[in-house]
Image (cartoon, rainbow, N blue to C red):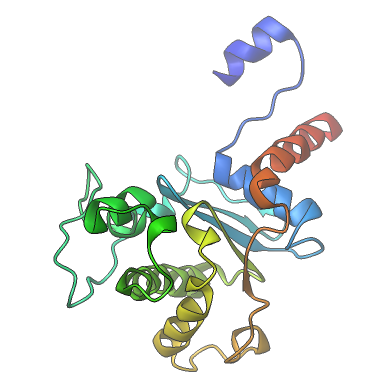
Length: 205
C-alpha cells in the first residue's frame, strides 16, 4: 500500500498503526509531551496499544498486537470471550463488544457501581502490569470509548498496585498517584494529531 501510494502521488508517505499514531500524538503534543517513552492503549471496539521507546515508535516482525495477550480469567467470570481467534484474550474479555455481549448493555449504560467495572479493571490491570514490566513506559495513556467511564481508573490503580506488589519502586507507581495512568490529553484527536506528527517526521527525513 505504501509503495503504491508513493508511486502514484510522488510525495513522502508515512504509514503506521492507529494506536502508534495516537501514541505519537500524545508524545508530541499531549499527555506524554517531553518524555522519551509512553504507551497508548485504546479500549473500545477492540483493544490495541502503541508504544514509543527511547523516542522511537515500536515496531517489529509486523507490529505489536498487545490487545491479544493472554490474561488470567477472573474466578467469577464465565463469559467465553468474543475474540474470533483466541476467545478469552484481553480483547476477547475486556473490549467494548465483550462488555456488551456479556452484560447485554453498552459500557456507557452500565452504572458506576456495576460489577462490570471491577471485572474490567481486573483484566486491564493485568495487561498494564505486563506492559510496565516489559517496556517500562514513562506514561500510560488509556483511550477509547470504554475508558470514558472514569470510575474505572481508581479500580485499575488499585488492582495494578496489588499485582506489582511493590516490585517496581518508583514514585510514578506510588499508591494514590493518578498522574501515571491517564486519559488522552488530546481526547479523540490523539490519532489525528499523531498522523500529522508522523507526516512531519517523514517530511523532516
